Length: 616
Image 1 (cartoon, one colour):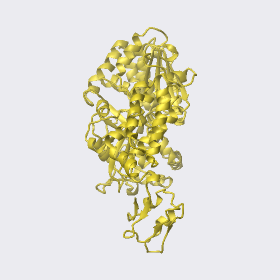
Image 2 (cartoon, one colour):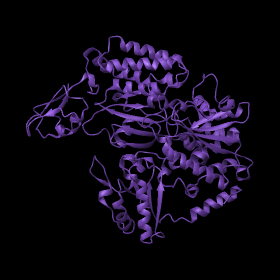
Image 3 (tube, helix red, strand yellow):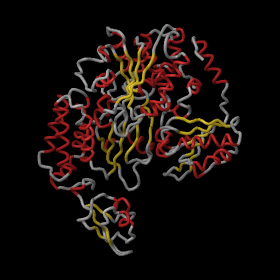
Image 4 (tube, helix red, strand yellow):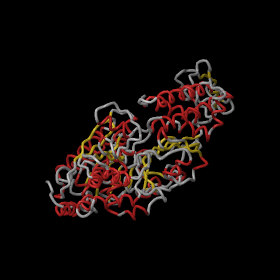
């Protein structure tokens, strides 16, 4: 069915909404990439088979959704309308969930989430501590709709913002609304989306392009992937609104080739949008035409940089160009181009529907709205969290994330991906926004948040990110190509016991050369992990260089494992798990480690329940 007017679109939305009973039982199953890895597709098939077997189609709906966020507990199942939250649901649980919970209201205790702090079993999704403090404005619909269903998106008001814009708002008024909302780019730079749109509209030259940057490459980050997988139409609608405001008829989604499900779901969304008539020629009889193509990148981190992305789209090597050439004037094919990331575009329909004043009411003075973070690392509750700007790090890590796993003490959190910095415990009560993170030597980035405990070596962390960036540098400019490599070599020396006095000062000197001389942000921000760890954890660098010790017990060349005889009860677990077979001892007697055979893998320390394995 192809609709040709605003009236037809409104009528279709109402028809779909009226045909759905909000009180009807509906089983939603997370089928994002994370839960699929746990076997979610087989679980979806099992639920469908059980419902069909018992002829329950009229009583129970089944919905395969995008990521619900609480990845640590997958596969996640939420049962509506009560919003009963089940976690780690297996194939053998499906029949019981249907017959006991859905049909008879009986709660299955074994599938409930247990609050670690109180031991309480949590029944409803909104009461789970992981979700309680979140404000899931952009990400919340992920758990309620089938991303492959255009009807599901229309049922929650989809494309109403587009209709509002095309049916009464001038392009300039749309831009002013986005500027008034103070929507800042969620891809890393935090630049005003409205000002960027306005600059592109005023730029001379046609055609003008609108691009969605889905080349998410930060280690541990998967926010954009999950949005594209779970709610692709929200991104398409945001791009259409932006294109109308800018005066563009052609758009691209540049997505990592490593995101096959995101590519699949957004491609289906584009096809269904064309079929319906909300994408393509003369949309809703408004005179506005716009279409979108999906381009898959080759996995180069540098292609997340705007000019390198344009080069890749044009079929050339993904290399950046000098920043004095603005994309809004000369971007893709040297034409005016507006580039925003996935999360930025997904915010646009919310702003148009609810208004700039509503959006302004959320967040801090200069950072409005919410931000999605991927919370990973040494944290109990791994997953995606959406919080209002201004929430403190402590609230995110302790209240939502559940703190560090037992036995570990919080040490630092790294934000902003490999270009960000490591923030120590002293700043845990700092409100999170674009400007606050910059002040402490880090950045928002796309939203990666890696938590570290006291068993993390900060020198090794800096080395890890330098290694990553060294491999991802395009090699075009000397400061980045040579500077990152040289810094990594110095960090190798420090971690392997060859560190010398003056190495830290050399690292700082090269860092400033990279910041001043690199062609693009990859090189200019590469020193952030190094500079922030030197600033806040300089004593660890000193211990590595002067004492030839790694305080965290990570750098193999600077440590050795030893068994404390007083704490060892001779259980033999460490000996059985040791891959080098270097641990020996009589049963129920203290064991010893053969230092010549030990490969320093750390399995003995990880497996010992009595803290008998120590690091020297």
